[in-house]
Image 1: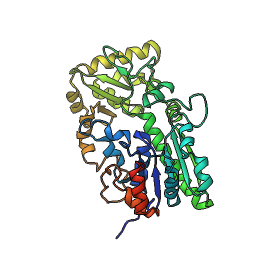
Image 2 (image 1 turned 180 degrees about the vertical axis):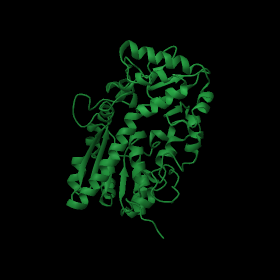
Image 3 (image 1 turned 60 degrees about the vertical axis):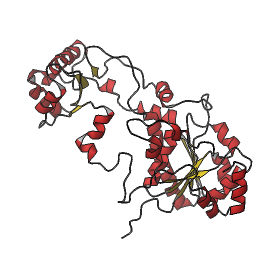
Length: 364
């Protein structure tokens, strides 16, 4: 029996580069969309040249189950080719600065004028207007501007020596924006089913980073019950005992039932409780604590390195970290640069002679 995926039959032209756009369209591909990655003939997506890390090829992870077409969007002939491709597409996703998108003719206003049923998604750094709209930036810059890199009084990191501020262990601005984009694209497709009209989707990575600040931070939650604690061997444990029942179970297993009423202590009393727990946690190694709490329901976990996280018993049982699985199909590998150019352009009505001319001119 053939299983139909939610976005089977939806065609996406992906003009984006690097992580945010690739992750957004990966989610669409995992849901069944035919994602055609439009890449510059001179090297393609810059992510192709990034070195692997810990055995991870990020381009391969983010671009599997997609097709690759080379097209130099800066050339005078590119607009004609792109509009032919748009005729058979449902979604176009781009990640250029606003002025660049307009210059290349891939902004939503230009595309919707000629293709009113398209969903035109822009995944830009700072949105389409405002004083920063044309600035270059990456995830660490968006986080910095959103106030996510500042250390606060009452940090959840409890150690003998507080380390200097560091960026979070994940590209939260990029990933958050990618998830917003994918969600809004699917919503726009749903709206088109009702109205018959396409629409513009505008996602700002900076705004996605700012959105994280709407929710409680680890600093705001910080208390003895919600913190990272160093152990005797220099390893770390994460305690998330926010609910009273978890804190009670933790204190009792720690041998400090006297701390149970002080879960949300403030001021000097809070500092005293934190210090009491910190000293206690330094009494055993990480693995010794994990053994002691193995059968305790208290929200206590090890702080893993990336390699440890991948080897974890639960993570090892997952199919793929990056996959939004809705079927049992095996994803196709990421495409070689331009591997699908001829097939896709032929389907768009561009014959072999014209493709040869475009290729000789370096346009595809």
